[in-house]
Length: 383
Image (cartoon, rainbow, N blue to C red; front, side, top):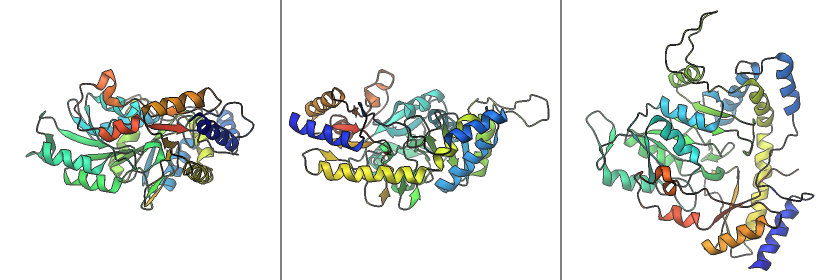
């Protein structure tokens, strides 16, 4: 296989010429980034109050189709706030996937709730609606208060947090229908899927709340940043209030009426985000072109490229391929990373981490099969 690996490494290098080492995903600043950031410096409004914060929220509404957007300091905090807004409480359970980034489960844990791990679909890498239905039909019941309870643990199942893995939309409309039937609040972890659509609807707006990340390695970045979107005015108002330390508006007095959080995105980061968002469509089309090139290349090999499913338009934040088994996966990772091409396996499955080994889980055979084979390859926007 080394000759095949060498050919693939050279092919990837050919997509990103004049680089000694090809990173997995690096930011690209070719628009108004410097201009807008300098504007904030000149204005002296570099913290969470400033025109670019408002502009960022307006742009997120325009892009996603959500009625309201709240600028958050990072994606993890956006998830934490979303769970608080959904009234997830200490002792509750939250349905999610084991194949996810740690932030999903960390945010659940901040509240004292527990993740309950269900399997993914092999073709979307996202939470499987059939796995959700099987679990709920067999192990859950709706109580007299209208909420759903786990018959085995007696705990309330208050929310469901699927993730659009690597920007590939999952079957989110089916998940939304299941959650509505069982009175479970749907929170979309759309951290990786800005610019992705399912059935002509942007990810993040199928549920009660959606969250996004603008970390340095995302399709567009603000350095550090996140967003929360919703169509619910009451939730949006509460989110803005709680993320600004629950401060009651007053010309000079410092009065707070709840436990608040310092979660608002600074104007400095919002300026960078606005300049990047202006280029989102261009960036996504560039990344989709690269995904098509990869898909055609890997069709010539025994290595499989992971494409979007029918009715989906993915941003292909990180392109993913599937090797034949764990041994070949490790050989591929070793070869690429010692020959100038960054490649990474999927995150360690959450149920295998020491913090979550005690969490309830159902069959995760798809998640484990993917973890033994998947590799992410360089996916940056190309000049």
